[in-house]
Length: 196
Image: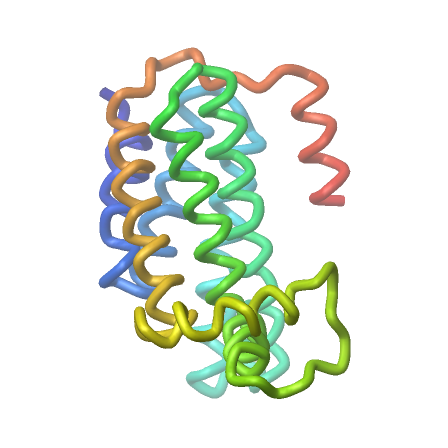
């Protein structure tokens, strides 16, 4: 079993408790996995995550100020999006159901936990009128308000989905077959469009 897959499994398992530490582990895992599979795209995803975490730490410690921290935050958010897309594509390519389930759960958890999403949904579910109802999200959130409040709100749901997705990601990476994670040229092109 490759070192990259072990790092990815450990990193995703630590997601519910380790916070930024899990971002470092998973980023390093993508970097190692990209080197092992000879797929620079995975390595670039990992580098984006590591650079983002480094920029946040530098900015918070007075090197470059809030601008550097803000740029790092954007890079880490981009890293999360790209890593979830990579998990999905790996799951489809390898016919690995655990990775596909993980990608869906992590994507929904990320949407609920992303800055502003949880607050906007919480505001909508508490009956406040939203300025913009993107695709009926505020309307649906308002209808789901009672259920969301009963389970602890959108934050609790995001944590539960992230933990669920993390377990499946770890299982998926541990069961992944080496050498079958190569993306087709068309899939590589889709990623490149998103990166550039």
